[in-house]
Structure formats: C-alpha cells, structure tokens
Amino acid sequence: MINLKFTIHQFLLTVSISLGLGFTVIAQQTSDTKFKKPVTETIQKIESLFDIEVIDDRKLLEDKELDYADWRIERGNLEVSLTNVLLPFNLTYFKQADGTYQIRKFEHHKISIDKAENKLAFLAKNYSTLAEWKTRKASLKTCMRETFGLNNAPKTPDSKPILTKKRNYKGYSVENIGIEILPGVYATGSVYKPYPLKQKAAVIITPNGHFLDGRYRKDEQIRCAMLAKMGAVVINYDLFAWGESELQFPVENHQNSIASTVQVLTGIRLLDYALKLKYADPEQVGVTGGSGGGSHTMFLAAIDDRVKVSVPVVMVSSHFSGGCPCESGRGIHLCGKGTNNAEIAALAAPKPQLIISDGEDWTYTVPELEFPFIQNSYGFYGKRELVENAHFPKEGHDYGYSKRMAMYPFMAKYLDLDLKVVKDFNGKIDESEVIIEDKEAFLVFGKSGKKLPNNALKNIDRLYEMFGEKNQKNNDVEN
Image: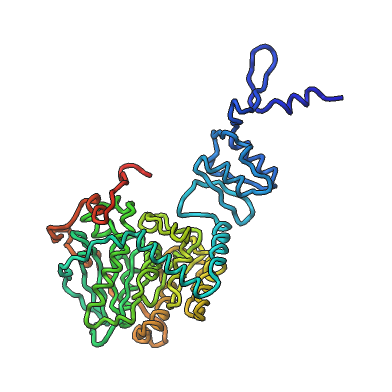
C-alpha cells in the first residue's frame, strides 16, 4: 500500500502558504518559480551529499535566495558545486586546515591554499625543460611590461635631479632626492652612500611597503644605512600618493591602479639615475623591500635584467598577491593565462634570491609550498643553491631585526659588500651606530612643500593620459 501522505510530501516542496481554511498547501518548486530556494538549504544539501562542514561565521549567506538552486549541484564534484552556488553572490570558499569550508567574499588577489597548490602543480606541468621555462619566462616578462603600461611611458625628462644637503655619519652619508620620472611627476627618496666613498659601489634599490611612516621609519633607516656602511649606494623611495608624493597626489590616489605603474617606473628610473653615477658598479645591483615593497622587489627583479640580486621580504605567496592596487591593480597576475607571486619570484632565476617569510601572514606556506616550486625553476639552470629561504615561524609581517640579519650576509655575499665593517668585537652584526633622523630631515621639498617645482603635476587624470589611458576610478566611491 502506498503512503499517500508521504508521497505528497515528496511531491510538494519547501515554501508553505497558509490559506486560512484549516490546512496548509506547500508551494511546489518548479520552473514557474525558477526552482528558487534559500541558498542555505542548498549548502546544507551539499554538506550532506559530500559529508563536509561549511562555515558561514561571517553570515554572508543570510537572507539570500538562489534561482535553480539544487540544479547547480554536480554530484561527484564538490568544488564545482560550491562554486556554482556561491558565484552568483560574488562569494567563494576557502578550505581550512581542519577540512571545513569557510565562506568568504570573492577577492581577486586572494585564494585558498588548496587552490594555490593546484595552480602551482598546473604551472609546473607546463615546463619541464630549461627551453620551455625560458619561453614561459620571456612571455611573462613581456606581458608584465605591457600590462603595467611601461611600453607607453613617456621618456624621462632631462631635468636635473634635486639633491639636498648631504648629512655625514660614521661610515655612511644621507641626502634626499627628488627626480622627475615623468613630465611634472617627481619621485622622492633618500640616497645612502658609503662615507667616505673611495671605490666602485654596488647599487641597491629599496621599494617601500605600507608600513607606518614609510621611508622615515626607524627600520627603513637602519636597513639603508647598514647597507651603505657595507659599501653600497642605497636608494629608498616613497610610494605613489604616499609621503612627499602626497604633495602632488592625495592619498586616495594610491588606490588607483596607475599607482603600480608609477611605482615600478620609479624603481627603474631611480636605477637609471644611480647607474650613471661614476662610482656605481652596473654589475652589482640589488633590490629588497618588505610587504608591498616585497611585491615591487619581485616585479623589478622580474622585468629589469640589470638587477643581479633580490631579497623579497614577507610577500612571496601563491595564494595572495597583495590587496593594494599598487600591487595587484593592473592585472599582471592574469599574464600567461594566469600566474602568481611565486612564479613571478621565480622569474629572477638563476640570479641569487633570498626569500624571507614568516609564520603569521600569507607567507607561512613558503617553506613547504612556494619555495620548492621556485627552486624547481632554478634547477633548470643547475643553480638551485642560488635561491634560499629564511623562514621565521614565530614572527609576523615586518622587515624587523631578524629579517635584516638574514638579508645582510646574503647581500654581502653576492654584491661583494664588506660585512666585517658592521660587526662588533664579538663578530656580531651591530646596528647601534646608525643615527635615526627625524622625518623632517628626509623632506626634499621642505616641511610645507614650498620647494615643490612649479611644473609639478597634480591631476590624476592627466597622469593616466600620459600612458594613453583614461582614469575610470571614482575615488569617492569604494569599488
């Protein structure tokens, strides 16, 4: 005998409508309703089918309904099912270490670890010989330059660099520089040199990250001064629309994608300037920076063949490419049908590279995930020993003391710097003699910016136009 009540409940589905007649009719899900249902119910069905747990601790699924909800489930394919259900709401999932799946907002610069692992495995299968790797490398470099817009950049103006009075300290000197990298666009920075300067010197470019106070901060001053004492000319510079650059472009312009173009171009054109100095050694060029400066360390090492040694700090990751448009705003990670910072770091091969990572940010996976992948590229040249990883599992996101202690010997080894001059009687590297200056000492254009050249550009739209582009960002509205 057929249980009629059971059959009806199988036939009629979830939405109940009270008719006020003493009984309830349940509205059937059909094409008339586009098979609509709460997305939470479809997620529960996925949990049951695949025996998993989905975490929505940010309540991103609340009050959301989905057309053709259960039709989006593909049996036997959990990842596709979750993607089909979440994508209409601009959501995604991150698989956690405990096997659960956490619901997150979609962010183009961030993916889950399991997806990063799959991407690296896919990339590695695409080149198994040196010739194949060189083809991939050349293609990515070309695309990165085009995507940044460097091929459309106006020529460097022939104006003379603005240099402030030099301050001499024990073993090094500091002066400020303002250099016109584009018509009316001035990059500002600090130039540290060995003092006295008597012989050919290595050149080290140090892009800034988003750490508080930028190039004025204590850690930045120590790093640059120590490298100068060791025998290098070091140039540290402001981010676009950051520091003194704000005299021309307000800080909200730092969220424009053109920021990444200007910052890459700043590193290149400051290197142009440095290598014209009579005492600069063009065969000894290094680059190092932390966080966003770590991104630009990778970018500069990847696209500028003059760079011989690189030390990207707390930024190499296959699952995070930088949340700031100055890092990921131009879409360079779409080059080559998709790449990531691990592969971009590998473009430095076979030149010496030290990757510094820690346990409390997105670089915590470097020793097991990204570093072996990058080593593989160095292996094509038979030079695996030229890439190293200094990992600090109990530390966080900074370019602090221990990270500098790892960087100094590496730079000394490959740029022929003198590490002995910064060691104390016990053979320990000693940073105590570096003089920490006030912010005002680093200003190129004065405390109120009165020395800013008359031709200084202050229009972000005009800046885009220099590259043959149009500014499409409304800085008053978050997008």
